[in-house]
Amino acid sequence: MSLKRMKNCVRLPFFALMLLLHTNQTFAFETKVEQILPTKPERNSPWGEEPDRLKDLKILDGVDEANSLERWKEANREYSQAIEGFELQEKNLLKKHEEALKAFYYEDRYDWQKKARKDRLEKDLQKKIFEARNIANAKLIKGILLLDKIENPKIKEGESYQDLKAGLFREYIKHQTAFKNYIQSIDFLERYIALGEKYEKEAEPHRLLALSYEKLETTATKAKNVPLAEETKAAKKKHLLRFAELHYGKESKEYLAIEEKVLKDI
Image (tube, rainbow, N blue to C red):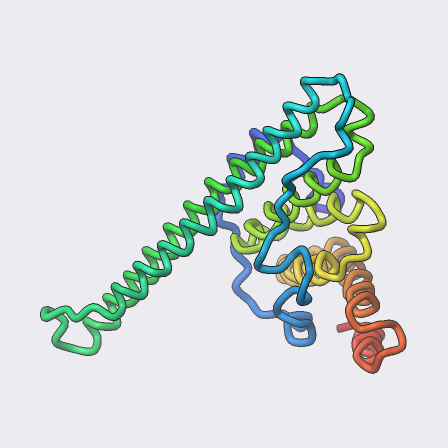
């Protein structure tokens, strides 16, 4: 399967993407790109731990397309609820998990029993966080669908419309990356940077694309799919260099070091 066909597989109606959310496609191996890139977004990046909230839509003053305005507002509500709902759920789950780890159980007499209980608690935590991510994703998808139904040109061409769509994409990508659903992450990351120059110039999407493309490259190599491996390798290199340029600067020693690794065909 070519990269183009693979990406087309995820350009589905959003109700179909909902079904894909329940798949748990994992790539457990470590990659070379992970060893040379930062593990977290830049400080003050919109990809950081505090997602952007969009409260006002001043550009809509005087617009008489009531349906488009209501759809924007509803999409913004879904966006906010997805963020706040997941943050609250994750916080509560982590708190309960810590309390359970600290609790003393008389029946745990041996170390293997304590380890088994700890493993069960960790598995249960990850399962519940997975469920919370799915709930958040359902709201994000609904928000994207609502924006796609907006037809009023004054709204669609406005900065608030683009920022909300970018925010919905960004949060959806974060969850898909956490799920290790790299094909879906790539598709929405490419859509994200295609929203405009403002978004293409963010370093984080290119970091995530480089990592995701390398995961697919490794999988393609193991499957002996040479054309796909070469295609994903080229995409990985492109975004790796673009990240280094945006994050470090083209004249920096970090950029030159990464460029050298790319030239050596990492």
